[in-house]
Image 1 (cartoon, rainbow, N blue to C red):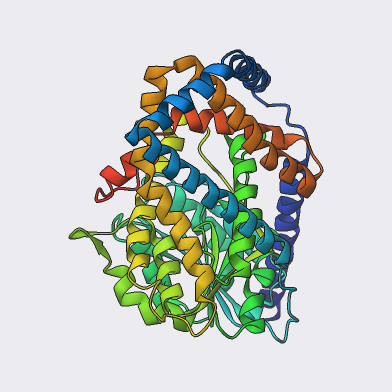
Image 2 (cartoon, rainbow, N blue to C red):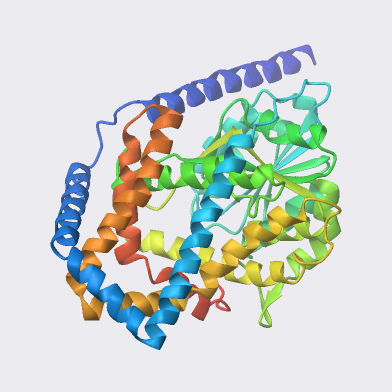
Length: 473
């Protein structure tokens, strides 16, 4: 009996050593210059700056045409209406940006509570065709400095076609009863895998982690602490960074975009107790809040079809509807893999876009009701901003195409100058947060999105009822 206990202790000690090394390797990977960086990255950056210079030159050459173009529009009734609408939209966006900035500066992460205060926690890791990555994810979770007797880790294989289950078995062999693994009889989708985990979980808090994400040692402790400090807290969004950002250009761009989306936008939303989406890569939910809406969540439909996407946004929406606070923890970080090629990127954005359309329609049903005792106005402002993006999607697309046909060079120049001005904020924000020049990828990302991904939102609106994950291999 004694020898078995010693063997078990040795396994735990060896696992901790290995996972600490894994954590150290990740930090080194994320802070060092990779030798495998694509040789095309410098070309992408150089091309971006050349395009911006061309844009400035073209806009300068045709600046008088721009004034004439605006005057011609103002002289017609339709053009005058367009200018009024565009000016009103710009004024709202500018005011909303200042509003977000104000709330960003008021935001503060909640400090981690003591071991005695930490609640019991169930971590759920759904996996599909992730291979060894799921093993890395599970090891990073075990390496958390969360009291072992307060944490339950469940991983569910959603009918993978590769060796994901083998890696889960290997993790189970190493971790013993610290890990529970289950296998779905067939691929049913991430929502159903999470549903199984929610029903088996015994913790007061449920944490969901994607199987291609790595957490740091303090992530879980920081993520769940707001539930102790705020009794009205129903959900917490983690801070997502890009894991595979050392080689290809797209992940580098997305890393800058994620910093803006999480550390600026969600910080501001958190100060209003109304983060609109807790990310699938890392999120935490009060178990009572989950079970209050679990039947509606698993049986959710859109236009008569079962919903198999947007499970994270749907859960957030249902918890907000309960009047609960949804917060963001900047100090709870997870690193996740993102698409490295355009094909995977636009498919991911289409899925997000369709979910955004669906959940904004759902949010419209309750956001102007008395869904919360106080602090409703901030939530409503956030919703209006989101809904305007959808509402103005087609008018802006038509205006853009009209501009291209009437004066393509002026369109090119004015658009590139706008990108230069708008993206400079992202560059400066990233530099201020991380003391690095990597934020310059914001320029390349804005150019890419403006000229090759502008169609995503209109397409997502038109195809909002379509099902399918799109990026699951």
